[in-house]
Amino acid sequence: MKGVRLTIAKQTVSSILDTLGDDDFFNIIAYNEEIQYVEPCLNGTLVQADHNNKEHFREHLDKLFAKGIGMLDGALNEAFDLLNEFNHTGEGSICSQAIMLIADGAVDTYDTIFAKYNWPDRKVRIFTYLIGREAAFADNLKWMACANKGFFTQISTLADVQENVMAYLHVLSRPKVIDQEHDVVWTEAYVDSTLADDKGLVLMTTVAMPVFSKQNETRSRGVLLGVVGTDVPVKELLKAIPKYKLGIHGYAFAITNNGYILTHPELRPLYELGKKRRKPNYSSVDLNEVEWEDRDDVVRLSVVCNNVHWFIINPKRLHDLEHHDVSLADEWTYCNTDLHPEHRHLTQLEAIKLYLTGKEPLLQCDKELIQEVLFDAVVSAPLEAYWTSLALNKSENSDKGVEVAFLGTRTGLTRINLFVGAEQLTNQDFLTSDDKDSVFNADHFPLWYRRAAEQIPGSFVYSIPFSSG
Image 1 (cartoon, rainbow, N blue to C red):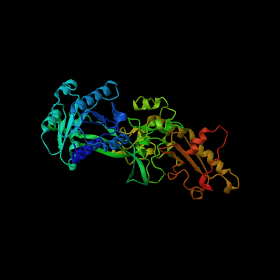
Image 2 (cartoon, rainbow, N blue to C red):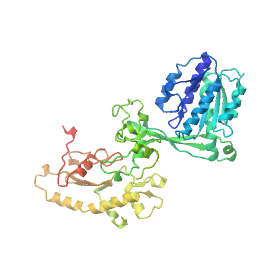
Image 3 (cartoon, helix red, strand yellow):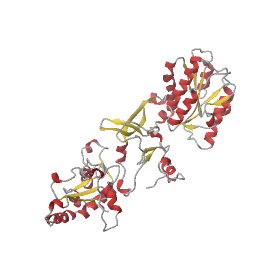
Image 4 (cartoon, rainbow, N blue to C red):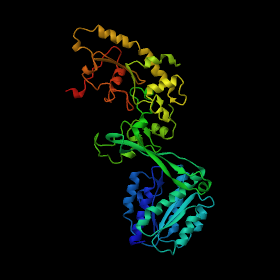
């Protein structure tokens, strides 16, 4: 296989690599009279198809050159042995297995090898790609694919590569179409911009699932209509985290089923905040790289394997939540108002009221959180009168007194009492949604809350902003 045919073959292999993701494992074997793993350091095993590994194999692929005669029997034996070993050791999920054969011909059908390893169950699909315009060996390669539940295609030019490579995906998808398995897939985190966010690049993930036809004739043939997906800013996922359960120094993180970080306080994909320069391989940071105390993979394995285990309401006290000095954390989800279109105009407080009074039975709310925030509102209600009495009895030096008093609870409730007019506040943004560090939000408890919660009762904390000069 020389000249342009070798170039087409390499591009075919590279295009197949493009179709693989973090859930896939692979290796590449070159063969003539002998077999040769493209990456000698990784012979006899399968490696994860993450970005780093695929690029590494591409570099070695470029160094291949043609020599000798292609003896396919040794390569097929090695490929089947490799898959069998991987399955017997329990490393693979044995979901879909395939051998992709890229060749410019085959002098035999090698049915004895298939009979030994793959028949009658045919668990390994064989996909054959005939490189070049000649059709002399097409019958053998086509028979090999059809006898092993695969697909045959001929690639004559570089322009044919992409379309012909993608054909194998339709074959692998047939069982899922026939069984109507709507698998939902979440991608690794990546940096991108959104139309709704004018603050530059943000962490995103994409959720996707297959689209099937419900018509019997289409379903029986296993025709995949396509894939539907949508981009989701990671900060939207953070809003669903029950912050009130975490404690002041607790934080939440999310990882993919492969252990890569989707979101974590220590994941910093950009070199500088607000800049567009991304760190290499930021989308494949393993949990072990940031959770350094998890030396035996206890946390990582429990999360990947999904083994993590993590008051009576009196609606008459609702008025305690409706005081002008009370606000709830903007980004926290007390009630999910996104499920039904008729709820999307509701504020969290309006949704809580409807939920507690039973007027909207379709509302899905966090009962425990609502119980606790209502309790906080009831218990802290007398503070307004207390603060008002302090304001009335304060000293004559009002210009050197207290401007604002506030209380925060771990349920996201904040009470604010101004001792001066709003226009007289020294820091106009303090405790408003514009000051992200001082209000409860989806990322963290505010700094003043964490510092106060740590203090020994009776002691004081003085916090001076660095920007004050």
